[in-house]
Length: 486
Picture 1 (cartoon, one colour):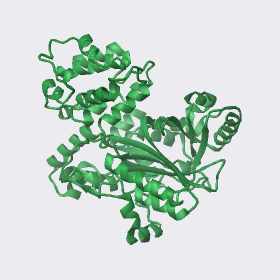
Picture 2 (cartoon, one colour; picture 1 turned 180 degrees about the horizontal axis):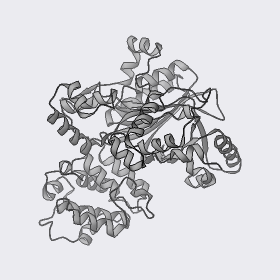
Picture 3 (cartoon, rainbow, N blue to C red; picture 1 turned 45 degrees about the vertical axis):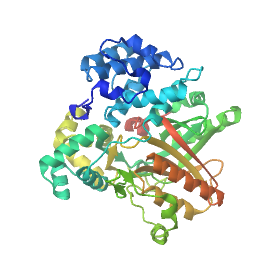
Picture 4 (cartoon, one colour; picture 1 turned 45 degrees about the horizontal axis):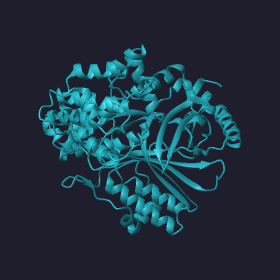
């Protein structure tokens, strides 16, 4: 963790914000076991141990040795991929939320645990605990200043700009922009990645959603094509899998879905994308003074200029809008597939670094990369890992294309959205959206209220809004997607 992301507050200052039972005269003298015993008995042992290790990590001012001890005791590392380790422990989750809250996550979590579980007798599940972590920081987000805002707004529209170009665009000194970029990278996980135009490569994307995670064992042969997964709460836990499929694999997964649906009692749905997702960030309505988005869905919906612009067909985040299947899929060479594999997640690396990773000459890489960019097979996109606490998934359906278009337009006004028009095998005539959203508590309330009103007026057929308790995307390998057969 970079020093810029560390909170200047010491553990006694932090714990003043925790429930009274955690106010201790000398935090240096209490053992991990003693701190663990302060937690409600409903907290699972594996979680209470990690909270105690996290406490120890904080009281030593985030000493690297204490992090190593924590990792050694649990077998996990502070890495986005730590969830892949067998017997996953939530080290990364704690440190992830610690960065978001600038050091305040422990007292926020303890307050939520005490108020939620101290009077209960049944132990919470890992899923409940993950939900609790998110709910602990619903009202918290890192503050940004006017220069941060200019940088984010500029990169959201032109993500490929390097620091010097960004300096020219926002009219601040190179040193100022560089320092703010470093802060945004540490505090909000800002980075630029490569997006692939899968439709042009003849690849269809689909979602499988079920209330029973075990059912995905029936689709294990398609795991090499899986790009993402998520768990979310719609009153109960649902599970999502996201696949990238060439035509042969697409036909086979549909056959398998039909077999599973017939013999299984679990609820499961298959959705295919009908167009490329519209993904991106929007800070245009951000109020620096209040550190809030000044946006209300219902108010914006009834404004005449909203409807006019919506009917014009304007899509603010248009990058790849090709509809599957393409007339003729773009043919990639083995070298181009190799380069796409290297570029995904590494767009801001230097040409020399990427070339070294791939074992090719930098001039050759530059030529091929430029060709792929010009042919719109790849493109840069801004990513901000953390800036709002509520990660949500929205599914909605309607018979009216105008309502769907309006929803797409409105959701592009919120901080982050990835909007996928989809259709199901059972109801191909019903217009549907599956959207991943990042919101604060006010935006969440406004959106849910708006959707309820649309449902009451029969403008929406149905909708579900879920809180994501875990998600992992960009898991797929281009070589597997384009070459593997089953």
